[in-house]
Amino acid sequence: MKKLFSFALALCLVSNVVSAQEADPWQKKKADSFRPLTDAQKSAIETAVPAQAVAAPKKERRVLLFYRCEGFIHGSIPYANYAVEAMAKKTKAFSVDLADTYDVFTPENLAKYDLILLNNTTHMQFQTPAQQDAFLDFIMNGKGLAGFHAASDNFGRHPDCRAVVGGEFAGHPWNAGGTWAFKLNDPEHVLNKSFDGKGFWHTDEIYQYNPETYVGTKNLRILVSLDMNQEAVSKLINDGPREVPVSWLRSAGKGRVFYTNFGHREDTFSKPMILKHMLDGLQYAIGDLEADSTPTDQAGQKPTALAPDQTK
Image 1 (cartoon, helix red, strand yellow):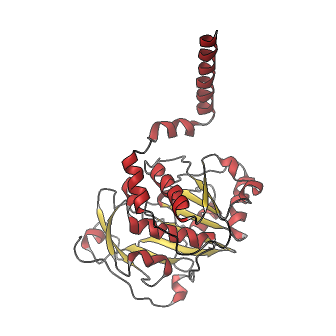
Image 2 (tube, one colour):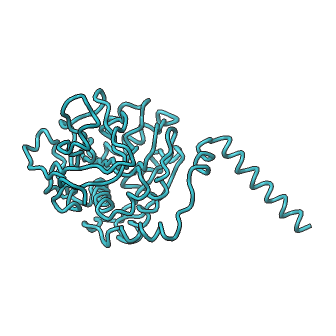
Image 3 (cartoon, helix red, strand yellow):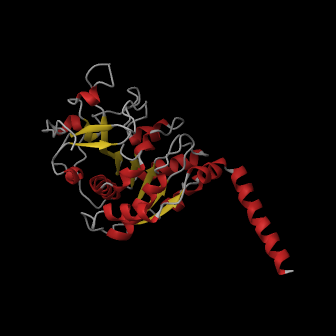
């Protein structure tokens, strides 16, 4: 009888999982796309996470990390999830809850949080206008938004949300297998401290942005961009000299936004300088780390720090 009961229970559980996947195709895509991290991979991430946060939290902070994809699914998502969880555990700068269903976007639920972090989300489509309103009100009324990599590949049906992020994906000539040169647009900015005032080379996939929807330097404070002085970078485009921003921050209503295009590759989340840059950005967006968000066009000319001529 016990064996029969156990078999029936197992069958019921499997049936429930199948039903859930049929009701929400994302659940099956997620199960097919993500694999558990190895102990070695976890250790590499934990080691790369800063020992402590730059700013002490002004109060207990809580982050809602959202990672659902309607489009391309990045295999780095579990690595970023684990990295942010490791940041929370190691630095005590915040606690974090992971979510991948749109029902978290209600005023009542979001009231528990200080920051929404979009981890490589793609083609987000809120199911109701109320969810979109809750998302925007959260930011505009004084909370924070942060995004990693594909957070700019979202909101085709929600232009107001897309504008808050600041840019919209329009291809990646600089692919994930290449090592690219990056310059600091503002070497002294507090959110660039992890780079020690120096440009650098890094292997990752880097986006360019739709010029029709990119909100531009009149709204964004650009922190890091591709170093077009390096031929390895500039030769991949032929439409004249232009800036390709990589990380930025901005004010949005009463709220704060931090975005970085780093994060396509799994190993990005075991790079200490990138994780510190991300953590500092999260602390700004949460409201604990003071940072100048004056748009680049209004901030005045800043010296830039170019990448070295050769990779190290």
